[in-house]
Length: 339
Image (cartoon, rainbow, N blue to C red; front, top):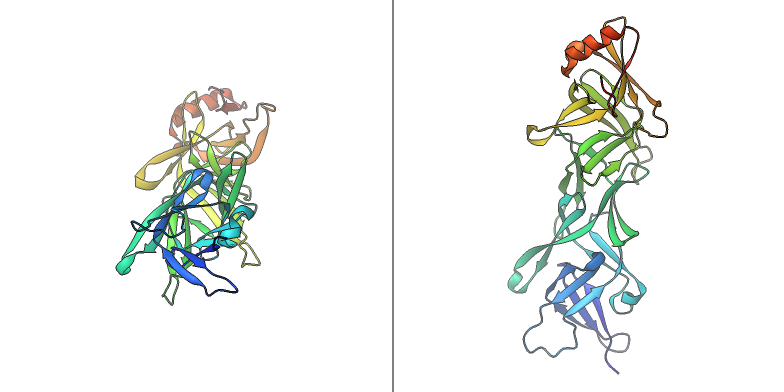
C-alpha cells in the first residue's frame, strides 16, 4: 500500500508535501514550483523537481474548486470533493492585484527559492466585472459557459479626477506590523441608458458595462450628477457616493444631444442622449430625455433640464433658430429623429 501524501501551502506560496499521519511522524518537503492558471480558471502547480529525483511526487498537481476573495484580498480556492482527498479543504494564495482589464484580473504572486531568492509571477484570471445589489464591485470568474465564481470587493470604490473607478484597500503583508495601501483602476467610460440607469462601460465594442443602483440623475448646464450608496459588510449604513461628471453639452445637426466628458490624458468622450426639445418663455431650451425603447417610442424619462443656447456647442445657434421657427412645437433629437 502506497504512502499517502497530503499537500499544504506555506507562507511563500510554495506547495508542501506532507507524509505520515496519526501513527507515523509527519515528514514535510517543500516543492519548488509555481502556480499556473489552467483552462476555465482551474489551478495547477508545476513542480521543479531536481534531476534524478525518485520521490513519489507528481510534477504537476491540478486543483479544482470555487474561487473567492479573502478579507485580506488574497485569492482563495475552496476545493471540490475530488481534490480534497489529497489537498485539504482550501488553498489561500497571498499576493497583490497589480492590474485589471475589461475581462481579466492580474494577481502577482511572490515565492521563495533556494538561498532566499524571491521571485514574482502573475496569475491572470478571466471573467467579467459587475456590481452587486449593494453597489459593490465584483469580478465573476468564468468556470463554465453559464457558471461563475464571485470575487467580492468589500471596500468602497471611488471616482478619480479622470472620471475612472478606483478601488483602494489595505492588506497585511507577512512580517509587517501595519497594513499597506493598494489600489487598482477600472478604466472605462460612464454612460446613461434609455431608462436613466447609470453604467460604467468597460468595452464599447462588446457593450460590457457595470450597472449601478442610483437615485434619479440631476442634469445641469455643465454637469451630470448621480448619488448612490455602497453597503459594505462592516457598515450598518451605506457609504454615500456622489458621481459628478463635468463637461460640455453639444448638439449636432441631424444627430443626438451629446455631453462631452474629459477622461485620462485629456481625451474627450461623448455621452449621447435622445430628447424632446422646446423653447421656453425665458429664451432657454428645455430638454426632456427620451427612452429609445422600440416598443414605446413616445415614452419619455422624467429627466428634464434647461440650457441657455449660448452654452450649446456645435450646431447650437442653428438649433435655436429652428426652435424659434417652430413656435410652440417641440423638436425630437436623436434616435433617428432629424431637425
